[in-house]
Length: 146
Image: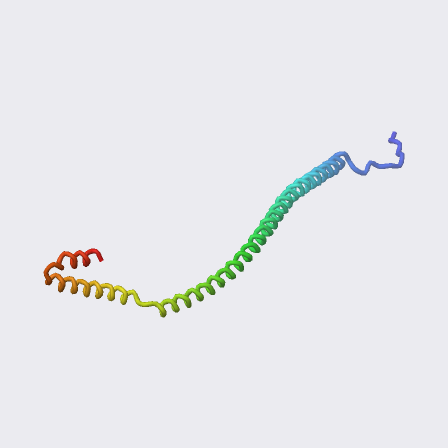
């Protein structure tokens, strides 16, 4: 006697079902591994972006600090220029005063020469007076003390 046919056939055999199930499991494992890798890369990139943001903020702060320093330096340079210009004007005035003083005074060489000449004349008179009797000590003393 033949088995009773109930109207359905087992279309897929046992080894074929095992291969399909194994394929689905492998695809699921690959999908989860890919998703895990994506999550790890996303976390890593988020950390790197955060570090880059911190670096950019630090550089922006440093740039603003340097700009303030440049503004202070510009102010100092302008003040230095003004002070230098006033110093040059004072120097011009002093140079004019010096030239006027130089033109109006008696030369130092003239004073020295006139002093030496007067001392020679006094010495000549003292020597001439030494030849007269009784005047020797007084004339020499006057020459040495004057």
